[in-house]
Length: 345
Image (tube, rainbow, N blue to C red; front, side):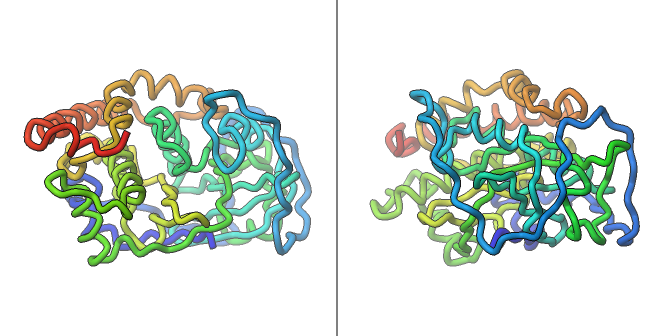
């Protein structure tokens, strides 16, 4: 199940997110079931659709046209096609609702296209925006098949149907709810990598003084990727039961990426030594992906023209962390050699 659980943050911040025990930002309690906050927003960009009764199983997505050579792919479609479909298609029906600190909705856009939608709520107006920014970071870094494509989207309140009850959504004057749409992951298995025995094992893989066991090379590479991803975004909410999961192939999925980009957190360097070995491609990507490049990429999101997706101070903190990470990896190379620090292409 694609359920959210935000738990176990405090003790894991310094070790695995690279932050010096910053407290998570306050989250306001959800309003009463009757509360619907109306705010001014630009005219709607999504067609209204009437909710229907959910199907027990989503239909199989149809075959798509071949992607261009070199296109980034995710679950059989190019990421660009996913972004277009999620942005342009109206919601046909809402199938499920999940809730922990946040609410997440499983929505059907028709023809087998399903999304996970994180809506804007009072006190949580920026959470979905950080999901969008995190996806652009993963894409620019070249992290493949780990972070579901994500795009800003407007959904009519009517499309939520009975699932809107008691949520307290922020609704604009056109009856629309802003949020982030991500590719729906039908399988998210717990891998318990937050538990101490597993942490000891994969921490050993990240030490360039040790060889990575052949049978663990792929999982170790994916751990390295998520460590870089989270350190650069200052995402403090990863290592718990539900934010590090695996798909049906046993590959890690980096989702629930809304806990990064807080200006007061990202501008503290934390400990860049959390990242000590990486794929060579990722080391080269971190050198290339400047704040200007990231800002330009985020500006292409459909909602970027009407909402402020991420603070300028967050971009400043990103650059500080990028430089600290690169400096630490260079120190690792001086100490252990390139082959040990970059054991994957």
